[in-house]
Amino acid sequence: MVGIRLSIAALCLLLVAPPAWGANILGLFTSHSQSHLILHMSMIKTLAESGHNVTVVSMVQPTVMHKDIHLIVIPMPEEQEKALDNQMKEMAGQKNSVFNTMTRLLSGMGIMIESQLDLLSHPRFQRIYETKFDLMFIGYFINDFQLGVAAKLKVPVIFAWMQAPMTVIDDLIGNPKEISYVPIMGTALGPGERMGFFKRAQNFGMDLMIRSLFLVFKARSTSYYERQFGNEPKDFPTLEEMQRNISLVFTHSHLVSEGFIRPLVPGCVEIGGIQIKEQPDSLPEDIAQFLEGAKHGGILLSLGSNIKSTAVKPELVQSMFKVLSGLKQRVIWKWEDLDNTPGKSANILYKKWLPQDDILAHPNIKLFITHAGKGGITEARYHAVPMVALPIFGDQPTNAATMQKSGYGLTLDLLQLNEENFKAHIEEVLGNEKYALAISRFSQLYRDRPVTAKQSVVYWTEYVLRHKGAPHLQSPAVHMTTVAYNNLDVYAALSAVLITALFLTWLVVKWICRKLCGKSKKEKKVKKH
Ligand SMILES: *[C@@H]1O[C@H](CO)[C@@H](O)[C@H](O)[C@H]1NC(C)=O
Ligand SMILES: *[C@@H]1O[C@H](CO)[C@@H](O)[C@H](O)[C@H]1NC(C)=O
Image 1 (cartoon, rainbow, N blue to C red):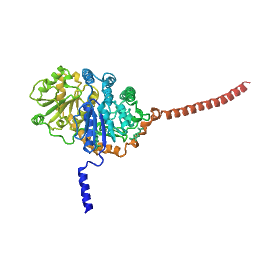
Image 2 (image 1 turned 60 degrees about the horizontal axis):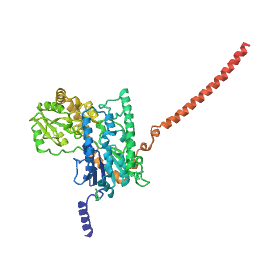
Image 3 (image 1 turned 180 degrees about the vertical axis):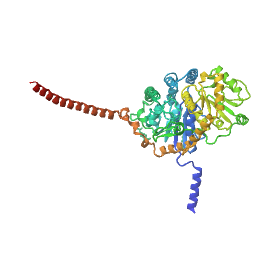
Image 4 (image 1 turned 90 degrees about the vertical axis):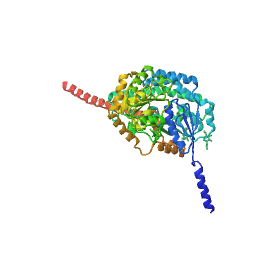
């Protein structure tokens, strides 16, 4: 009897009590970009849903949340915010390459990095150190100096990166460097396309350039680390030691469907598409009705969250309005300032905020007009909606070019936009079914996985928790010098042996020659006499 009662009591406890090992997890997602935060929050939310006690520190209010997440928002000081806004506006008014964007991060946009350092000294952040954590996430955005927080908390670290693994991430986790066939940022390739000599040379040059830039970032990170953690006890690990001790990296990518096929070490886990709901939520009433009544289909237009719509030149906006208001399709336009819309038209619905993913999931949506942010493209591809991309800066031109090469739509530089070309692009993508076919084929590949992105996040995070860090996953490459990694010392030794051998052979040949020639000369001399 007692036994039964006890087990009933135990059962009740099991039902009431939270999961036995809800770990204390800290997420440091301090990039100023909402689009980065959406990805990181979608990832961390799955851990809260699995019963872990998650605390998140961010700089902007996240749009993705979970009721059990302890959220600490430490906003950027107003002055910095203004300066950054101006930088963004400037960038929207010109053509920007990857290089240009990166050098801006070293100058005017350096605020985006410095503010992530300032945040660590904020009194509200300092209280973090009072809690005992089991694991820490860092959303990477040139903020590796934040690894000092993990050193203070003495916890293993998982990095999260918003894209496919790139140079810095490869170096951190030890992915092989394969620049002869893996295009890096700024080199756009379609699926199945291979790099010829010039593309490879360009890729090589780009790699060198990015590595040099990151040397500068690294020096800056080291000085920030010393500034912030210089007063810690003597045995406090250096930044380099911390960089070489990362347990895992989650990347928001899915190379098998997105390309490019390349080797990844076991510590690099892909969770691309985590922000996409497996089942869409129902749409707000006005949007649902608007789309249901779209006999000729609907179009979604969003230029993202980084650039406020008002930062785009008024003439451009007018051209866009003229074209869109003349279409028979219905258009949902993301527009911040509802008191000053580009114009009234029965087929256009302006919304300040949109459930983009749920709208793209609607079967009546036939076209997505986008600034080509990674997040939006991912959602459109998941839901098989062809696109017209209007890229502005950063990774957007590359995203857009890759999208076009893959056949999912067309791209048009936002600064080149006029009524004629905008209309022609829209009509082509809506009218020619090859775009819809290509993207629905991709959509099928993208969804075909052994486990979902959410399952991967939960499994691998708990794996790191179970083993108290995953040093056994570390690639030896992480701990090697450039010379050793590239076997340069072995090549040097081999060359030395080879050169010595050649030299010795040459000496011997010379000696033999002299002997023989000497002999024949003597013989000749003898004959003459
Ligand atoms: C959950 O995390 C918060 C820190 O944000 C901490 O104060 C609290 O004690 C934690 N709860 C448990 C059960 O550990
Ligand atoms: C590396 O991380 C593990 C846990 O992930 C920890 O036990 C170890 O002390 C760390 N080493 C250094 C040098 O920080």
